[in-house]
Image 1: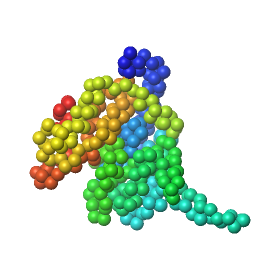
Image 2: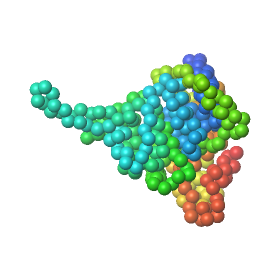
Image 3: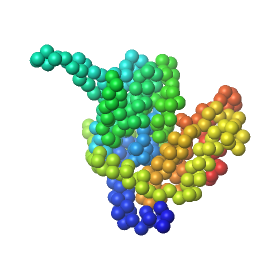
Amino acid sequence: MTEAEAAENSPELIGDLEKISSQFVDVKNGIGRIIFGQPRVIEETLITLLAGGHVLLIGVPGLGKTRLVETLGKVLGLDERRVQFTPDLMPADIIGSEVLEENDAGKRSFRFIQGPVFCQLLMADEINRASPRTQSALLQAMQENRVSVAGHYHDLPGPFHVLATQNPLEQEGTYPLPEAQLDRFLMQVDVEYPQLAAEREILTKTTGVQEEQPAKVMEAEELVHAQHMVRHIPVGESVISAILELVRSGRPGESSIKDINDHVAWGPGPRASQALMLAVRAAAVIDGRLAPSVDDVLALAHPILRHRMALNFAARAEGVTMAHIIDKLAARIG
């Protein structure tokens, strides 16, 4: 019996996935009553959280990125914190530090004081405004769900997710995120201006005497269980082949696509394949399906690959965009 057949014949798995799918319908509806005109952003962010990953939100100020994180924390029942990244922010301001204390008997000892990273949903606001030293303080937390201070490890609560924001307009006084840290984000979600109807709704519903408040739909333990169940979903061979074709074709030198070899400085690594594998499973569950399809791979190609590739000078000189490059890759499997 294949893995797919075993899953289809498992009433427990099917029942769990149907319950998770129903919960996330309620989650989306709850967020949609607070965040207007951003259904794609909400969908991609929820897929990332269900897949157990971190999100990089790119958008100009005023598009609701901060409000989205606050709403997610309340709807999903997560302990949410916010850190405003600035050039003078230090690593200890994020992960915490040890202080020397003396008890009544005169004995001295160090006590660790936790920083804001000890939460379940951390908003790193304008993350590129902090120095590389401070940005790197998040690397271990994002990858290992723990931090190291004075040679001692401190585990972070579960689940742990970083939702970082970045302003694409103002680049003065900023520090571009290193490739190693960018790769830790499962998705880069671009937040765009709302449509006319959505902006009209924003005007009428957010400037009155009372604003609707988000209601809790899930508990943190339920999200952890859902993340565990997602990994049990079988993935067909056609989907696996599509993921490998998409990712491997994006690497200059290995690709048979001329635009990739001519315009891409470096391509996505194996972590991109892992991200796609988890994300298509999560997308299927949120959509109420028991298995992902190649269409899921195509739908998630842009948010998963756009921050894991870089254009070379020739591409920038010719006006080639990353969206154009990823479209070329997707056309190979579409």
